[in-house]
Image (cartoon, rainbow, N blue to C red):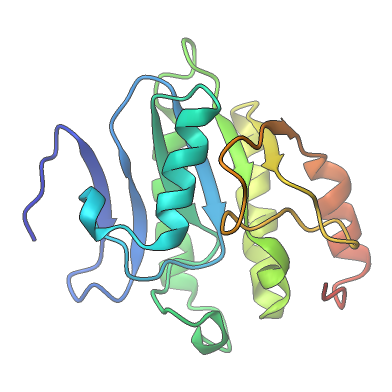
Length: 189
């Protein structure tokens, strides 16, 4: 697949069954974490509705670019169809890409991470463990976690779809959220 590497960031596997990173190049990116990637590819006409929302909300919140990463990098339009058990190899590779992104240019631009997985975190028990690994990694770089929109009644951050374009980012209590997940992994909505 060819795309303009001066404008787009894209990391996937050779069969396009796994997508680790998709985003635009910029100085002040908003990092967005969803559950799993769907069909989006580099190029505005190739974005799915979730990535279109991420792009719109990043720009409207003062960021010049965005990077979409997922808690689990397996591609599927339907999160119900992701693996039933974790593939540790792709999880570790996902963490490696996340580490690379979080470590870039930290002195000038501390990373802002948008928690944007909605209630989909409850689709598989291993997703919580993946998120805990990602959160631990983010602490190494003193990242700030934010959300956009109203959290669910059990505290899950809002998914990017169906958010109004004028919604503003707010600090997300990631440590307390993680503690809630650890103590009550059966929370579903």
